[in-house]
Amino acid sequence: MASFYEELNKSEIINDENENAQSRANIDKWIFRLFLILIAVMPIIVMANVEEVVSPLISNIDVITSGVKGDLFTHYKSIFILVITLIAFGMLLLKIFFMGGMIRKTALNYILALFAIAIIISTIASPNITIALNGQYNRSDGAISWLCYTALLFIAINIKYPVNVVRSIMYALIPFVYINLYIITMNFYGNDLLQEKWLQNLVSILLPEGANISESSVLVGTLNQWNYMSGMFAIMSAMYLAWAVLSEKWAEVFIGAITAAASMSILFMSISTSGFLTIIVILPFILILIIKNSEKQKSITALLISLIIVVPVFHILSQENDRVWEESFGFFVNTNPYTKEAASSTDYGFNFDSTVYASEKILELPVLPERSLAFGTGRGYIWNETLELVKERPLIGYGSDSLVYNFPHYQLESRAGMLDEHTIVDKTHNIYIAVLYGTGIFGFIALISICIWNVILVLKALVQKNKFNSTVLILGIAVLAYSVQALFNDSIPAITSIVFIFLGIVFSQGIKLKSDKE
Image (tube, rainbow, N blue to C red):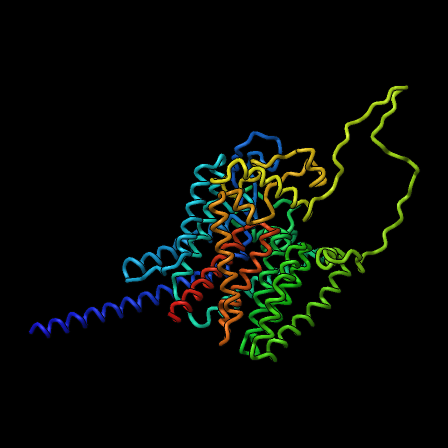
């Protein structure tokens, strides 16, 4: 009799575990679907929003003064990210506490915990708490967003993925690429879509009565401005080209190569050097993939298709606007073959100096710094001044996205770094320095550790002797491209949230490989 009950009890335990395993698998599927919704929908959201901004400073400078201000690109994106994050995190907790789920044991958990703690402490201790919590009204990159990114990364590490995880992500992002290609092409040729009445009505749906889109507003894409477009589509170019190179299906070779070329075209029309430099850095990794891939015919075909499209497109765009060359190859080559000859200037013979003669007395005017741009169109000056601020609060920082309220504006020295002492600096143009400024040294160490971990996993996958781990390589190269462009650009929700999901998937696959080996 005892034996019968023991067998019955074991049978019930096995059945319960099977049910829990099935429930956990379903939860993982739904979380991944939420990720796909975020990846596909969030970056194309463009909806106008107005809000009352309360500045921590009393000033007559429009950028940092209080008042009603509007935004097109980040407010509703950040809300979308917050909602998806909360739902996904709730589902993960449900899996852990009620379905026997486990958190993967990895040193990454400690790094993420350190990062989250640094964000929270820096926000509480910030001299501009409200700004540090929410971010600037037109960027929404404060503590709430950064905690969402961190949570998305943590969730992504702790779920299992279908075999076609990369294919699903690639197809999810295709509308984002081609929508932006259409928008930026129209803008590049002088037809700004935001001047169209139908689009104004569409993006103004949620505006309160009486609020309108400003006539000076410009739409270059579904991201905030040129630099973000350049950085994001450098990531897209690298990712789709890597996918095309590693694809086993001819259809996906063509789709990936053409979409990579479309992303490169957007990058060129963004007229910003950061994206082009990112591609230059990532290109050797793509070439290694081609060399090591067993199906070289598909890999070489993918590269050739992209080049056949990109080369003539680049020529046409440079003829339309010579800055396309200047902001790409012009970084390395001084001469611009697309520059049109300018009319010769007329010299009227005047000679200006700093000496004024009044009667027989000589009045010497103060010598001002000569106007010039520091490295990276003024970035060198911004980085130097921001690091000087960091020295005053190295451990806890100032709070995320609050630089504009603490940066030393109107310094005469800025003439030598920013051309004009009246330029208002609202961001660092470097994600690493921004995190160091915002969260202090501990947050900075955590972010650098995360990026280095990704590099290690990509390099390990590259030297792997058996079949490539395409998930780690394709998404890892996308994250690597993000890490490179981060040297010149800032974080925004539309980019960083997606990249942190990629990071989580790469880490998940890396940890999985290690566990299987053990």
